[in-house]
Image (cartoon, rainbow, N blue to C red):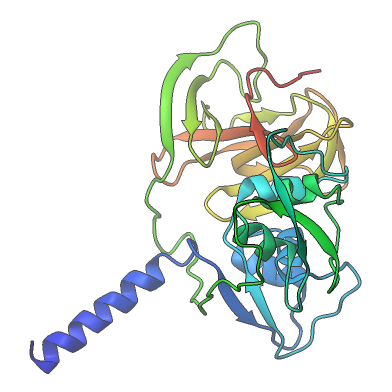
Length: 299
């Protein structure tokens, strides 16, 4: 291979890597004026995820030059960390645990990842709140059979590519499509319902262009913003701690802290970037674990 061919291959490889920046952890060097909120918006994740990945409390102040881990986006974890309830994520009663001692540099995110758990599961088996900050020497339960050591995952500094700059591949796995049951109320009227399986579990609902999206269970708005891979996202938490996630919104008409009443308009349906059709994706989470949206409570 001559030098020109080698250079071309290197350029193509760099372009390929930069075109898919959101599928692995990355690091970010804090600049003057940065806040957790501004960084979370830049990387299209939640502030709560940033805190968990870097063991930061609500009172911690960022410093210029500080390096932050930008975690891989996981909408289930985002939902779990957005709740105000103590984590009670379902964990198998057969799960065997061992004790792990927190080391310098550990975070909940890293410990969970290194021991085959999700952050909500780690919180649940240790009876920790979603705002918990761990300390060196603290004892935590982790899954037995893994190697409970403070191994740090490799991270790379990556260039952020806005969703408008390139169309991501469709990584959703689809199940059957059915017509809406007249006895079940959905956020949009009379949708075709397509099951979404795999890591992301929920339903895709067909809609009319700019159709109003209605709240199907009253609750407090916990998060409004663009979430990586899901477009504009809205999380509403019920008094029982369930999180109702409305994603792929065209517009959102509520803000964080609002109390959304059942049947009220919370926004409009957006246009899916892959199919080009008006639709939303609807999910319901119980402490980070998806439940069947058709069986989730309505009121």
